[in-house]
Image (tube, rainbow over all chains, first blue to last red; front, top):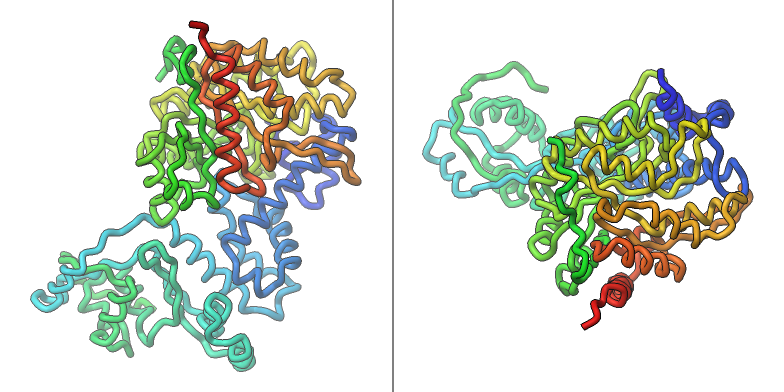
Length: 269
Length: 307
């Protein structure tokens, strides 16, 4: 390892390792801070990292911040910064492992739904930056003229379905939209009912709602490349003719297209 | 691509200076609506790495009305671990999409090994001004220019740490940056406030008697032909339990000594495009426009050619 590598690794360790003191002692061999005290400069970088961590996670996880409170959330962000430091130079892609980190937290075992909330928020965060997708609603007329085993549906950018053992849709919607109320969600948490959610982007707006019965199966089948006929077969419990107009209206389905895929796949659930 | 060092950079000596502002989220809509007279907008490249969505749509609307200067904070050009190909490809995609008037990042590092993993500290960490560091920086800048097929600009830092390197292996910062520009063909982005912040911190540490004179000396040592853009911003003085330090927080108006240094820089470098940066506690758009107007007025005073 050359000198520059040793210098750079020493500074990175002093900023990202926790507890930091052993690494800070090693850094003294290589550098001194500016200002009135040699330690002051490193404090500036440490503070900047922590502030950035809080700001980045607050942007991606506003519901979690509401649930935990501002101070606990800031503490979480700082702990996560050291446990899972960024690997990219784009801070907006940092934070994808927060659900995993929450699941490992002994302090949060009493709130076991938090990792699922984090997963839903990350899906919302990421779908905001997905590539735009052009739709053509006129192509939906193919559904009346073509064999459904030769058709697929064009789905919204950022589409994700999530299954949770908790009332995940209720938790998210209560904090994002105020409906249901927090009291209602509190009652649901006492005897948890599993819920599935759908996340997608309607225009530029990330959206989340409770999945209809069988809807997640349909969407996963379509995303896996199944033709419409087989995807509908996989979506047990879904009334497709009822679902389609709602999905079109909400920007979840953008059009239809011919496909050469007519394969039936084994269970996708 | 080996960029031709003789290729003219964006400065235009003897002509009017181009003045822009940093375009940040609080002003996205207002600026598009009011379309103030500005010569360019600067945005942080990484804020627009998205492949689509509302943010990219805003940038494309801005691009249809103003030239855009893409200013990065995450390339980690001085990293001994090398550039992150993912990051470079995101930047290349953005450059192709926006066709910016200038593209830049910093003479800094953030990427390196932590244990067995490669991490990125998401900060602008200083480089030692050594031959070894210069070699790494030149190679990485050249790789960026080869990929983007355009001349890149590299900015001087405000640094809160100083490396302990053997004096015989240490260059002065202007010499380090001049050599970078000569070897790689890149241009230099001179942040006047950063020079002043470094001088103030050196004064706090007892290493600088006259910060303003030290900054003018810094500017005198910088080769004018290399300079492609100037940055102006505010800073703050922090005095807490850990000690006193000056922080380049981009959170206030440009201070009088930095305006004086700007006048000095324009006199030396000519009509170099100039940016007003404000990233913390972003004020009303009018305040930024006012700062930009002041920069334009100073540059015009300095550059006036007698009839």
